[in-house]
Amino acid sequence: MPKGLPKIYIAKYGISKAAWAAYRADQKAGRVRLDTVIKRAGKPKRRGGGMVKKVRRKRPGFTLPIAPILGLGSGFFLAPEGWNPPVNAILEGDAKAAGESLLANFLFYDCVNKKFDFVNKGIGTKLTIVGLIVHWIAGKFGVNRALGRARVPVVRV
Image (cartoon, rainbow, N blue to C red; front, side, top):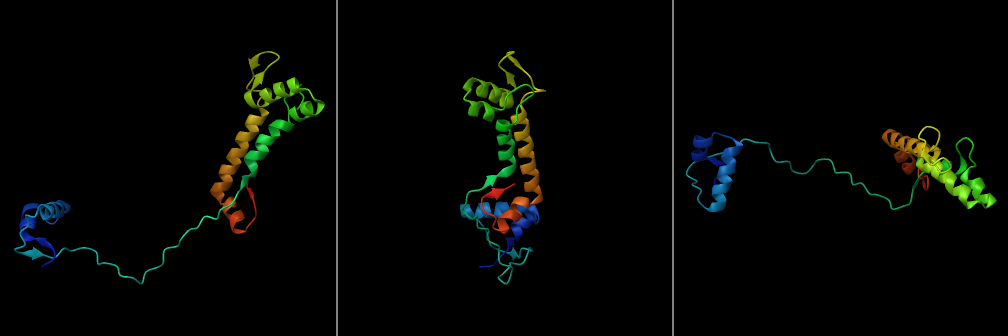
């Protein structure tokens, strides 16, 4: 059986993708005439001998992103002006003060004045966002990939 696009389709459509689409559609329907055929000019087929595709294998493991965790943890150890840090309040046994300082650190809410203060409060949230940005930038520079290749356990920036 001759290979290529029949002259009938070339006369009707020219040598184009539309001609090949019509030819294949007619082939499926079983109504193709193979009187005269012109070979398709195209890329030669590749046969072996090329580069082997690199396979990426993800190693199973648990990693901790240090920058966001430090930002989150700072909300427990730092406090806005005039407030007791949440860790100190917990160690003193004052649950109410610890809850109020956590609200001030993470939700920008001042329980005493019953107001939101986005300038002076929210240290924990602000530092967590900074940690996430540092983590994102470190990922763009490939720091985490380098740590993984160096087989540093658990820690990522």
